Length: 145
Image (cartoon, rainbow, N blue to C red; front, top):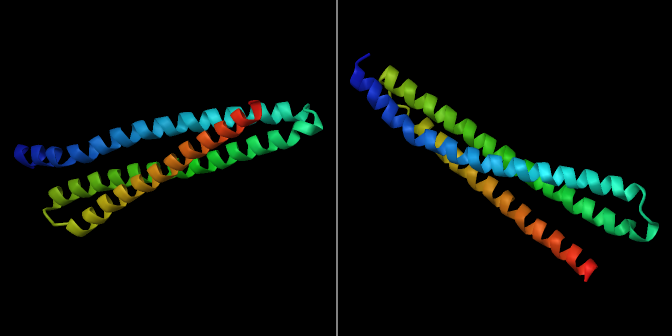
């Protein structure tokens, strides 16, 4: 293989690698949020065991909201992870295309499209989590006020 072909192969794969970095940072943010939701749920569950009966509904509502948020974040994390997987497959397809000298335009387009769709799905669920977290805060503030 000629050095110019290797350079061309590396140039072609740089853009998808940047996608992996960006999505990885989003994934880090989502997993941190999920960890906080799980920790807060455990604290509330422990507190609810010794709570007075008149406040049990409040604990149940908060725990349910946190459980719903965890589900949204899980879906967002899965979609982001799928997006990274598709980028990896895209990079591999680009390498194989250059090494074999054959055109894999259709699979590459499908992989890139799937990556972007997965990223969009991930962001939709992430935004739903943000909205639900503000709703939970509003419920808690209303109870305190």
